[in-house]
Picture 1 (cartoon, rainbow, N blue to C red):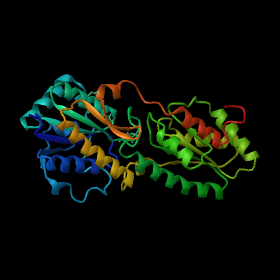
Picture 2: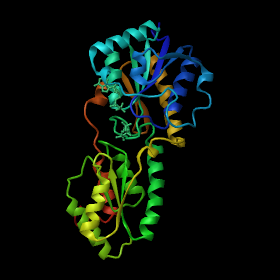
Picture 3: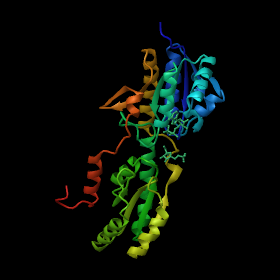
Picture 4: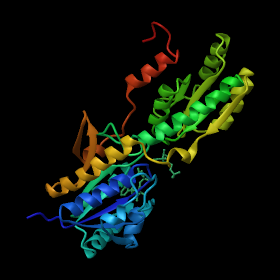
Length: 330
Ligand code: ADP
Ligand code: F6P
């Protein structure tokens, strides 16, 4: 007999568009399969405060199209200690919650893994705009965020071209360069500065700007990841060194909010349903990923085993298409 009766669901870490679709899928799949569902508000912080409510099908009506998370999210530093994790497991048991779906990034997965060790059947869903989770080519929110950033950059580019300026556009990603790299490719940028690759060689950036200008290029778009940062001071230094008007634009949280794309709604829905199915199959301490064209389950430990790098080939394609690499370089 299955030991899964009541499933808790929470969102943790940075919010991401599509989290609501995942919550809805968890709730409705669980109810359809005869389970109870409880929503835990404000991530692990809310769990410790016992902010727990019963969920039914109606409680997730009208949310699939909304960005953010209806369960709210939070960061909770104290959850990193064993003592606090044990208290959380006790609280879950007190509320009859034997199984938990955690929607969040790799930090949230660490918390999920800890609860699994304490006997809670735990499944993680990759919820982050950063795409920086191992064992998956997709994370909930990345598609929306990168499309939002791409559209914003197109707009900045119009002004940049009209004024023949250089533009540094900062996108999110503290330690992950996926949004920056994809915008570099999608927006036809001249340069991308990625936390995984940037060598702090500002002079090389300046040289490329001058070279492009000498070839007659009207604008110069540099996509800078948040993890590199300092876009405003970089713009000042570039303007001083090149004599070309240079402006910095920081896109910020506009990339994290907003209505999720079709892909984020659909993939998040499938992942939410898959989490419940995995629990019913007796799985625990797993994370759902989309890899090799399939939704699959991986051990949380395997997912957390190493940090994810950006694909070198994608970076090389960017360099080639932006004219960054010359013939014979590759
Ligand atoms: P994300 O889940 O998006 O990577 P964070 O890294 O901020 O975001 O982690 C979210 C939350 O997950 C943290 O506030 C904390 O509650 C929990 N968490 C992070 N790291 C650990 C850890 N090593 N052990 C247990 N819980 C953790
Ligand atoms: O993980 C998503 C993300 O938006 C990162 O790209 C960013 O570095 C981080 O969260 C910022 O989080 P906050 O400002 O909410 O602490």
